[in-house]
Length: 157
Image 1 (tube, rainbow, N blue to C red):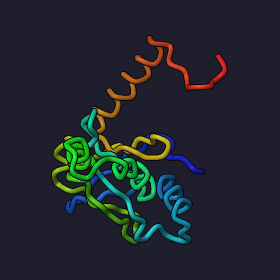
Image 2: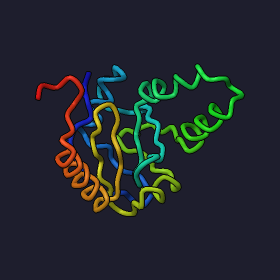
Image 3: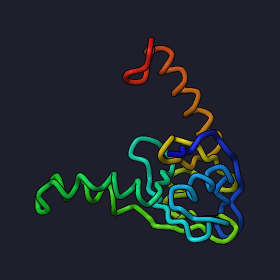
Image 4: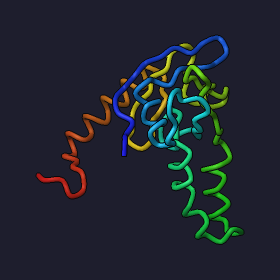
């Protein structure tokens, strides 16, 4: 399976559109079996619960994220809260023929993006950040991982 890797910066145009980086479009095309351009590739955008950024989920990954909700009683408070947290602020978008997406105003405001954005690969998903905030987040993550000696589960020491 292809993963979203790296950090890429792009500019928003006057209509709030931004080009998804070419390496990310390649991953999206591979995941959906699309050939040629990545026109109409579905994504779900949502605000991060933890950070001032936008999470971008390929449609199948978002379905997998939400699947456990089906195991909860539909009328329970837990289901209601989690469904609101997962779905209420989510926006389905599709890439256009140039590989661009439109960032909804509420998500752009949540992330503090104005004219430039940074796409950060997160493996199965990617995040969209305001550039300075993205740099701080990457630096904090590297420092915390180093200080706490984080390792991946099952990784050789």
